[in-house]
Image (cartoon, rainbow, N blue to C red):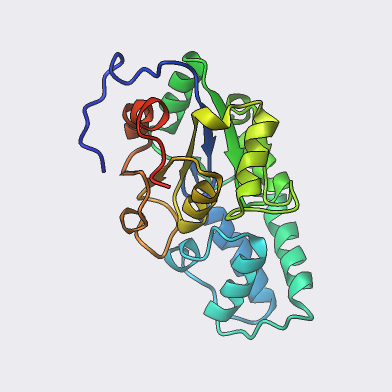
Length: 241
């Protein structure tokens, strides 16, 4: 976590930047809705329910991995022949109600308001499928902040592939030379490194490996700490590469 003090003058970037932000575990706490949907699927397979703390560690690699790992964690044996059907069943359950228990993390709204007022371009890059991503942003009144939203099925590749991140920047009309990725996991970090873009990780997200150990350009404990770091990342040292 950075100990640099934040103030409106020192934190101001020389020119607007493009800020690409992950959804689950970074911007919005979605684990309660994901857990509810996964447990409905598991119950239909006569498997035990999983606690939120377990599901929290399974999020981030897309729906297929979430369902596969969830089945394993509940004592099931994922059958490759039937896994696509179970993934679709999860999508159907989750898609009917993806946001009723989800909430933006503390400090998110005030930070997004600040960045919008300062003229920065904001985009969403998430491995969650496009449809529920759009619904969550709509239901939580976050959609107007984003120039583009790229779910995990928007392109032929997804994070950690660089093309998901660079494609999102292009959709938003952003500048990859003045861009920072904001995420919570090794998936986000690998995508940013592959694209040559600096990355800030939050340490409250969904990852089995502590964010502070992953080697990001910066790690924070609150979304409100990020503005103080942006001048050094965008106008200064850039990515560690």
